[in-house]
Amino acid sequence: MNSRNILLGACTLAILAFSGCISVPSEIVQLHQKEMDIANELQRTHLALVDSYVDERLLVFEDFYFNEYGPKYLANWKAAFKSVKGREYDETTDFGTLHPDLVVEYQEKTKPIEDLRAQLKDSVKAAYAQFQQSHAGTHAWLLSAKKLDKQRRASTNRLLAAVKPDLSLESIDRKIAEIQNQLNPN
Image (cartoon, rainbow, N blue to C red):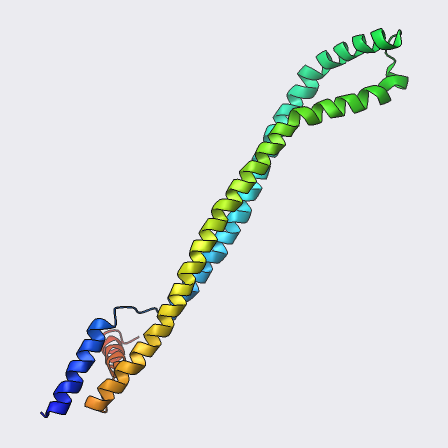
């Protein structure tokens, strides 16, 4: 063996040893994108869950509001109406006066619940935005590693071809595939 081949062999081993073990199959990049798609669907589902839960709790509140609180509110409102107008409340003619007051009262009572809904949704969106930002960074790294892996393989192949023309990383891959086919003749 001449010194040139020894030097090339040593360089090849050094490149393999120091180039790192970064290897990113294309399936990983695809899987990573699928993970992002799933996360986007989860975000949509979590936001819908918040809405559904708050809507359900509002229905419970509305039942209380109109069946328990409403009659007491109406009695107090009628008493205030009589003291202001000097006559009894007449449902057929005075309902237009009661209804806006009742709606405003309802909106005032449900505003904190709607505020909580908005805060919960903002919190879910913020958590997913943080995940998406982290995911984007990882995705960029995977693409960079995939590109680096291609460059590393090409560089290693050139060095191996200089040492022995029929020796390359692809020849190793082909040999492994050949052995696997022999072991699994489907």
